[in-house]
Image 1 (cartoon, one colour):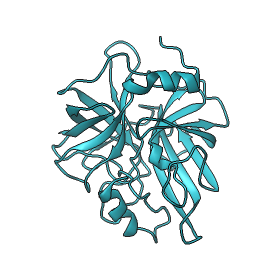
Image 2 (image 1 turned 90 degrees about the vertical axis):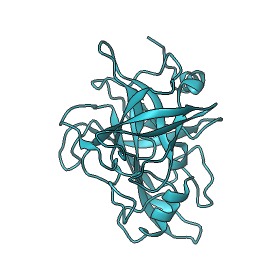
Image 3 (image 1 turned 45 degrees about the horizontal axis):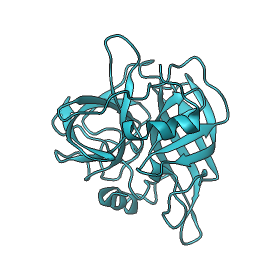
Image 4 (image 1 turned 90 degrees about the horizontal axis):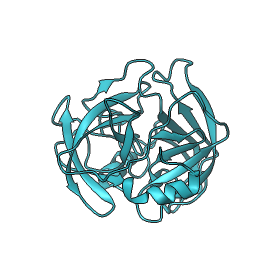
Length: 256
């Protein structure tokens, strides 16, 4: 988990939606997404997460639809009272809002997370929902490895700062650039619309993807950890290309 995210959480436990031990925000210094665009984006809302002292807290993450009934997000979005990643919904209720750009509206779908699978190698989880969504085109899985210098788009429902973070009710977006390629992670830094465009609390699990001139966008990584936002330092993101076989085994996904 991320030190910056943990700090944000401790400062926000009295909020209606408190941060995880390490979430990311509604993309600091990003832009609002036009209504109806990037409909594969997902808001995860967790109500009644057990805490170590026997209490309950609420939280949120971001994610993306990769099949009609599976959502890609960060592994740390599903942790028990001891902070251990688990393969089950940890909250009393985990709701997935899919394809709703403005959460105050009524577009898209609302579903319940009923199962979780954790990647054995990096900070990635797959969350299964209780319905199939067939009229939103999911993100494609990556077919090539990312490279230093690649510019990727990010979407998320997080806050816009680590100071008293509150999840956004509007999907936001920005571009980050790959600075390092490691075995299971990517280093990324803000690119546009500003140099300090970065994920924040509650952006955890949000997809970094490449947009093709022809064809469906491909997910490259998901938000994992980083400094307090906004910032101009490196984010640590979880690579997806290195776990495609595992994703396919869980989702029964067929590459196009």
